[in-house]
Length: 137
Image 1 (cartoon, helix red, strand yellow):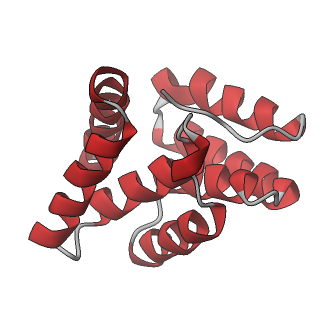
Image 2 (cartoon, helix red, strand yellow; image 1 turned 60 degrees about the horizontal axis):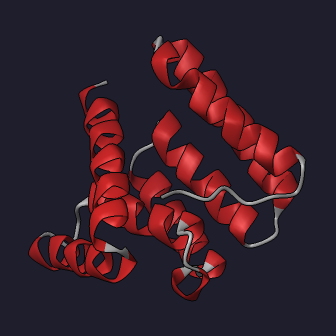
């Protein structure tokens, strides 16, 4: 449960950084985090989320985001990491996969009692059901 809450905090900070400094600087921070600890799944997940959801199209890369998110999920399975994979699938125009994966994320949230994040995850699901990738920032 602790790593899930840490990731949610990390995602919030990532969003604030993008708003304040722009996407290019955020990429630098993520790369530095990955260089300092190449096995850090939070950094890898953050990078996958960024590649899938960045408002600046020049930074988005759905295929790369899917690969990173799948790698993260091969190490640890939780609702937040499934949410990232769903966003990556949507960015890669794999909306059926995005919907199924987001539904899994929501079920895990409910199972873990993380109801605070439920409305946000449902917004993501609604976006995928209408054929739109999620945008963050």
